[in-house]
Length: 491
Image 1: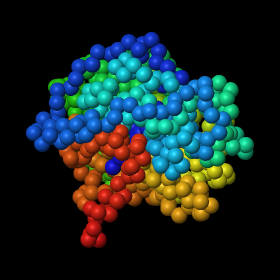
Image 2: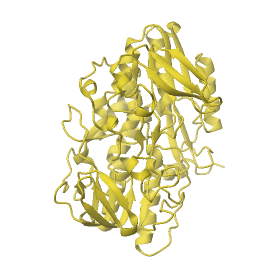
Image 3: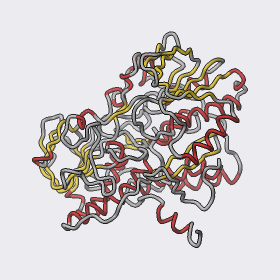
Image 4: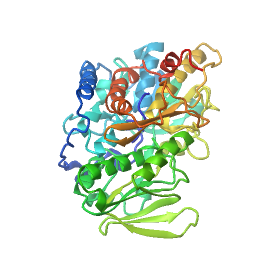
């Protein structure tokens, strides 16, 4: 039930591409946002929302930590690379294991929001709703200083090199830091630049992306400004974080067009490089019913390779016939960028041939270096890259490391659990939960392939509460215990 990382499910990880970290002039100019009229207005819904907002406000706004970029110690018992969801969560858990003074986390101090005025940690799963005008961007971030565990040293630098044979890393500033145990949580890299015409094309209207802090509000602006024509949504030919996010914004956009009287003027197209709408048949069948009922066009094996933003044209390549392209004009374009492991990992000895951290899929321990571990989007775990997966992985990895610290073999095994709340309208969600085998692993004692208001409220309000107040503090390892409780006495 912990949120899916859409947009990764995870808050910006340590190694983002330049486009994601350094907002250009056109990014920094604020986009005027017109809040969407409340779409869930029943008394019960308002009470539910109020409850979780009150709970979230109880969180302490600041944490004391020993953040530094100049006086960092040269050795730490546990060194965490990355300050995204996986990094912060594991730093909290390791603090409980070995004490805050023995844990450090490396995360640059870049990235800010005007309203917060500081380095910001983002809860990216909510960006689907930000891009649809149902949430404000400012609600998705908190100062990084407030989420780093108190007493844990924050090294405000960027990892430049990993040397696991010598148990040390080197930072951009040239500092060498050694460790006894290393946790790699560097997230995933957004490669907008692999699409010709991007990222510079985002300076033009009618185009947005829910995957970047600098472009998510542009999605909402493009949605509001839509008049008549093609609304195109894309899915790239690479692994992505939260594979459901590219189609969630399509469903929300269609709902918005209906609510604003524009649906008859909109031709909605989902061009995906994949061969199916979703990897789990139960949920794929449910989604296909929605696609047919709402007259949405889905084209498979179509990969976005170029954006001509000045002409409002998108160029797609047929994956089954390389070299064969199609140019489609658009009135609105939502881009899901190609993604890859961070560059610093690709050139390190800890990755597999594809550039992902090479870990055991059950224990999350590195296959070669026994004191190195990986979590989240940067790993080669064969499951969907979401924040829900990170939550489940964190509990397993905590147990794995604690046993290895005692010279014992890891026993707890990760089954690949992940979750994707598939938002299908402004008040409905299909809650997909599944494992390595793409089999449903549902928490609640009802059919989660059905669109439900309760699941929307959980996505919009309960999941952010769990993220800020439990997961990042090391207390939430996924809903496995709830699943057992809800299914007691059931076959």
